[in-house]
Each structure stands twice: as structure tokens, then as C-alpha cells.
Length: 136
Length: 497
Image 1 (cartoon, each protein chain N blue to C red):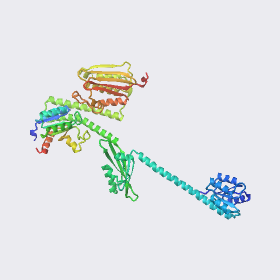
Image 2 (spheres, rainbow over the protein chains, first blue to last red):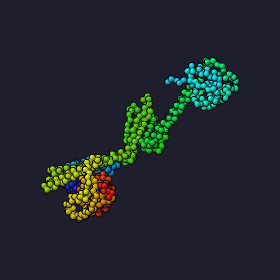
Image 3 (cartoon, rainbow over the protein chains, first blue to last red):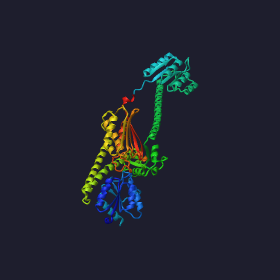
């Protein structure tokens, strides 16, 4: 399934993480787009229509990643693409979000969480898992 | 306790009779006093406390009945006998009406007299005893009533809530705090209370009532009665058993722990934030090293070096952050070792500015530095003052614009030395101003990209200033710059000048 995945958007305010993503995902033959803030990230998302998106959780605000994920999922309509939330915090609880209720899970709208630093293989495995789940 | 001798008073105008009776009674172990007439008799009887009095009916100065009346008036417990040779029906009635114990007809035998008086003494003793008991009982009743109302007052005044539920689940006792915490307007006694209680508390109490043999010890439970840490109560249920071991009810103590929970929440938030801030540079550094080691990436040497340098730089900033956190922790715990001495502020400011010479030149920032002549010294730890102004001036340089200005001024302002640090840099948005001194706050906008920092510098500044009872004020305009004024108290001896 990953063969057809050629384009991934990474949004993170830590430029170091962006350069790493470019290097490791680029080495797998993936085209990587990057943005270092939520607004630019959404703009690139609409222009490039990536096959998967990796979002940093905490950017300008503690919940920037969630907000952006929500906005992107809404903009996707029926053409669903996976969104992964990358965070340096192992579990998201204790932050602004205790994602315990169904409403909150629904609201967060991300498909999986990636622990930083992530490897290319981890990203590809999550993408595979996503498409298996939705039965593509 | 040996009983005191019975006290008797003999009132008679016949001397012989007086003496005879006195001698007889003294032999019987009475304590005897005599009076030779009615007036004297009344006086003695009312000023002393006699058990019995023998009163002659016919006395020249005062009639025996009158003597009896006057004695009874003042000493109702003295048992009085009228002695007379001329008993008439009327006087007998009159004397009895006035409270005489009895008549003793003259002439009387020793036994007759003793027999009568003994009865009198016994009566008098019983009367006294019963009066004492009556008084004691009244006092106890009063005490009990006071005790009850005192207990009620105490329980009602408790900040903790108290609720007692009986074995049928009915409220049998509660105080106003309990109603407030449970959000109940009213709870009439003897009314089924369980349904009105919060679910968790209801379940806890039910466990005691339904299975008393399983729940025999107190259990506490924290109940978030209002969301967002508005009201958290710790409910402690204690079973109240009957003497036979069956359950009589449950005593529920409700303690408001909202403030504690709030602090706990803040602490958790802080820990989460610290973890995140510490993990980010670690993740970035490991990420760089993994990328270099990943055989797939095939990086050229130049990129490898660049990635390693960036990993080192992130680790260095991590080290700075850890040191800052340790400093904050020392300040919080007040374990920082201080070396207080007279500190020359002007010198420190000059040194600090020179520390940033390179950055200032690189950004072509114009420095305008001036201190008042004879600026009073401050008593402080030199390192801390240096730290304070290093953080402030470092920000003023870091966040300044290319070709901007840095103004540093120090002058005396009353009992304080006031230092102004002004930059022409990024400035703060209105919503950022209240977060400025919070740990890990960093202004994130188009101007601050690429500026590194731990987000702890201003928090440390604030803590240092506060620890010297100083004050820090600032004005800021987004895109135009920020001005800080730090006021530190000057040396006490110089304040009066």
C-alpha cells in the first residue's frame, strides 16, 4: 500500500524535526513537504494535497496540532487521508487534553500518535495500519 | 463521712427546764444552745443553722407561735417543736399550720423528748439530702441542655460537612456545610436521603447499609462534585454499629479539598510541561543521530556534520534548561545559598552589556547606557543580580531588530534603585503579556522563528526580583518593543539620606 504513498506533509515548529523528516522519509523515495506553523501547514495541505500528514501537537498553542487536524479532516470531505500526531510527550493526558471521552476522541480527529523522534519505518507502518483498517 | 452532731436550740424562759434539756441532749451527743426568751430565741435560731428547735409556747416577751413563725420564715429546714403545758386545739392548729413538727406536752419524760427530737433530726437530714439531690439533678439537666446546644453549635459551625444516615437510608443528622457541599437546598430529617446524594456517595453509603458485615472500617473517596476543579470533596464514611453489631447508620464527613486538588492539577500540568520541554531537545538530538546512522539516508559528509552540530546545540540548550530548572527548584525550596553583600549596580550593568558585545555588533544595535552618579548600592547576592540582568539584557538583544536600540538606565527612585531596560524588538501581543513570567512561555510569531530559549529566563527574573522584595513592571507594544523597569530596594542605611 505504501508504494502509492508518494507525498507526505510534515508540520512542526521545530525546524530540526522538519529537516530530519525530509532526510529519513526522502530516503524512502517519499516527497516531503514541510511547514513550520499551522497556517502555512494548512495552506500547503490545500495546495499539495498530500497522501498523509504528520502534525506536531504543540506549536503556537498547546492544541495547535489538534485544531489543525480538525480543520484538515473537515476540508478533506470524503477523500480521507491519514493524519498522525507527533509529540514528545508519551501520553497526551495531563496536557490541555485528557482525551478520555468519545466526543473528545472524535474531536481530535487524528488517526494515530507518533512518538518523537519517529523513524521512516514507524511512519510507513502506521500508514499501512491505517489503510488496512479502513479496508482500502 | 462521720455525721456532724445534730444541733439543737432550746428556747424557754424557765431556766431549770432549759438547763435540764441541755444536759440531757448533750448526753445524747447533741450540740445544744439555749435562749431564755422569744426574741433571743428568734435571733439565735435565724443566725445559726439548727437542725431542731424546742420552743416554749408561753414566754413573756414573745409568744411561742410568733417565734415559730419568724424562725420558719428564715430557716424553713429547722424542725421546730412547740412545748407547752396548756395545749389548746387552736394553738395546736395554728402551730401546725405554721410548720411546727409537733407538740411536746409539758411535763415530758426524757424518752418522750428524745424520741421526738430524733425524728425531727432525721426528717431534717432527709430534707437536706433531697434538696441537695434535687439541686444536683437540676444542674445536670441544665448541663445536658447546654452540652447539647454546644454540640449543635460546634457541628453547625464546622467547615466540614457532617451527614448521618440511619440504617433505613434516612438522614438523621446533618449540618449546613453538608447541604452546601452536596448542593442541596433542604433535607428534612427522617426523609429518605440516599436518592438525593451524588451517585458515588450514594453507592458508598449503600455498601455499608446493604452489606454491613463486609464494610466495617472507614472509607474515603474523592468526589468531583463540580467540574474543572471548582468543587472537590473528600467523603469519609464511618459505620456506626449498634451494641449487638448490627448497623445503626453511617456517619459521613465531607471535607472540601478543592484547593488541594487545584494545586495538584497545577503541579501535574507543570510536570507535563517540563517533561515535554525536556523531551523535545532529546528527541531532536536522537533524531539527528538516527538520521545520520540510517543507512537509507546516505547523507553527504557536510550534511552529517551539520546535523551533528545541531544535535550538540540542542543538547547544550537542554543542559541550560536543566540548570535553569534546578535554579528555580532551589529558589522554590529556598535552598539557594546566598552571599549577601553591597552590590554596585552600575558595574554589574556595564559588565552584563559587555557580555553581549558580539551579538550587539552583529545586529548593529545602538546601546544607550547611563547610570545616575552616586547610585546607592543594594544588598544582594551578586550572582543573582547578574543573572537577573543577564536574562533581561539577553532578551533585549535577542528579540531586538537589526539596527535597533538598547537603552539601559539606572537611577534612584525613593527607597529603590530602578533599572530600565528598553528594546526596540518584537514586543508582546496583549494576550501574551499575562503569560510573560510563566515557566516555558515563549513568544511564538513570525519574528521569533529561529530564536532559541528555554522559556525560563523571565520566570527566573521574576523570582529573583520577588525574593528581594523588589518589583518588576513592563510596557510592551507588539512589533515596537518592550520596556522593563526593575526596582530593587537600596541599602537600609542609605534610604534615609
